[in-house]
Length: 140
Image: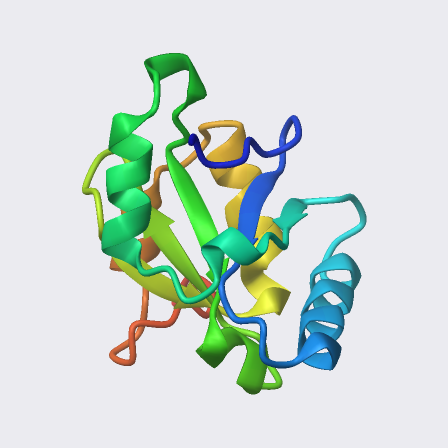
C-alpha cells in the first residue's frame, strides 16, 4: 500500500506514536501556529504505529513511481514528548534514509522550500547541529 500523499504544496507528517492523544493535538497546534498557511498534511493511521524509517523506505520503494513521495516527517515518540515537537525529517529519494530533526517552529521554512523544490533535503540536513537538529541557518 503506498504512503499517503500530501496535499498540494504541503509536506506529509506521519504519526507513528499513538501513546498520547493530547501530545498529537499539541504537535498539530504547534505546526499550525508556526506559519501563516497550512504546511502539513497530517496523517494519523494506526497501520503506521511504531513503523521505522527502513519499513517506510521499503514501502515507498514498492510504490508505483507516480505514487512515490520524496520526503516526509515523522511524529514519533521523540516528537510527541519534547515540547518543541522535533519531527524526524526523512529523505526517501536522493539519500534514502537520511534523517534530521526539525522543531515545529522551523517546519514551515523547510516544508515550503522542499515542496516548491527551492532547496533540497540535503541542504537542511547539512545545516543540522551536532545533535542532528535543524535550528535555522547561521547568518554569520
